[in-house]
Length: 261
Image: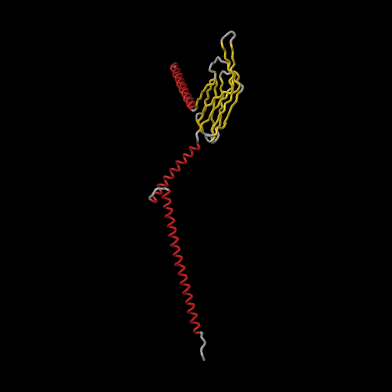
């Protein structure tokens, strides 16, 4: 009985470990899928750079540089290493984003260095470019008695490649605004057609504008005629009052005429 319980317990633990391992593997796979790997060679040196595959302006990327010898038996002494990350302002002008220099590597076996927080500036989009500069010496040995050793210097050798795609969010926002504007134009065109039975165009707007000003002109003309009639009425009234006053004055003068004795 105890043996069965022990077997069941071990089996449960095994299942739990299996599930946990699978979960970790899936997580690692998801993380690795977000990275982009680039590799190249310089004489006797293999270079690999892992970096964030995609990002946005204002966010950070991670860049990891690894160096190794092509031939493990070769002796390689690195005197100078520089890793520079470049971006393109407005997608055109190349600018330095970050860099790292190491002059303390000495003999190369396996080398790895990570820049964990490389911030992408605003208004930078397109691609981030990685450039590696190396100065080093390689010792070549040739069999013989004695063994012949030749030290070959390599100075300021460069390797570069694109590492991260930076989305142009400004273009994306502009495209969204353009889509909204197109929807507004379609809506206005529908309303215009329902109101005037014609499509929204420059020609039709000019026709409507001309018709509008014609109506305004006719209105002003009719308003002017009304004013003339009112003025005529006023003059008639004034003339009538003046006539009445003159008649009254005449009658008054006639009655006031002195009598003859």
